[in-house]
Length: 329
Length: 261
Image (cartoon, rainbow over the protein chains, first blue to last red):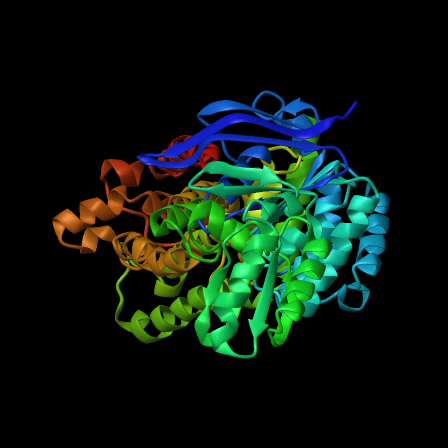
């Protein structure tokens, strides 16, 4: 039987007339990574703040690690880790002092807190900077320290709120590797991101959120398939042959190709990828049409997002809601 | 209950570590009262009168002690606002720790800090010719009144930070908010020598109560006139801080709970 570490049913949260969350549903099975994908102000952070007991909600029900978020917040808090958009560490304390502080507050004894801090500093590559103030850390180091602070008592559910926003690609890869390692050890992860690549890389399942609602849910591949899936693209050498090629391709693939005469390209959705490609190559060859380029192109999550929400993920949908979010954060 | 104390102590230690790791802030808050001692004690002081007679510097020092307690408001409010704005408070609130620890830890650390400030200021005072004349017991009682005032100011500061949240804004408003309380009080000038309305406001100023009370306990000059607040300075020096705590502590706690709205 699958246990669900995060369950949200019909969560609603409003700020005055703004609905930050509107009948938000979510189930995350144990040991998986679930991505919440959406633009700024879509409600991702609101959802995470509710599930981590930081924010009360108006309607619905939520359980995390088997405990009701509203009625048993302390049981939830003892079992979760939270790494937010803002690196929530003490900037005056050193890296080691930060981890020892959080260890003490997680009820570790003094010696155990010290041991655990040392262990995490080493694992996160911060042992050399351990006695420097966290305020002097680079963005990537600070994010790693923040992540380490969430892991002091190996959480059952780890919440990562835009964990790589503002990081350079190398630091981003480091964070991704750390997250993969945690999941391999059995931690369940709920991740919010506005980066499609991040969701694609890490998440087993993704909820696409827009205006406080889940507008689609599925594996990255399922979401990509929603746009019509993969496509065959053909670039012919001579523009006058584009229409001829399009007629042949339409018969094989059973769909009308999209034409882009300027770059002599046609593009058509394909179901049986390899057989379709072989048939198209053969038909064009038989008809004597010279082909400059031909290939299969996988749908991107970017297209899926555009298809589902009507706008790209990095465009903030509601500046008002985004401002509000910054305010509560 | 044990977790309330343990977590409160952990947070106290955290705030004290801040003082050790970033002493420049402490030095900043020290420089102000010392500057006032030098400017008022030696520059303006020659032209200053003490009601009832007596040495002006000896009159001034208790006022500077109280002023130092008041300017602790800046340290408290900025510290809490920084925690709020940087997301550190969110991390604390997502952990299974005592909710009260953030405030009790702040309050206890502020008190320890005030002790440190008081010891330094007492020594500075002795260096410029100030002294206590009524024995160690009354002097310690005076220090106790100063610390009581500091606790009250801590709660005002916590409330202010929760209200304003932005540390830069807090930094900007603290001084203009606090300065009138020191100017229109008995810190620098005896209220009897002020125009009547301002003199009355000065006498009822909460700071004046503590200043008058500790002048009496230290045996320093400048005992107020025969007005009611001047004659009941000791009572008011306890009542005013108690009233401030009874008002601002519940307000701060309520504001803190509203963070989850």
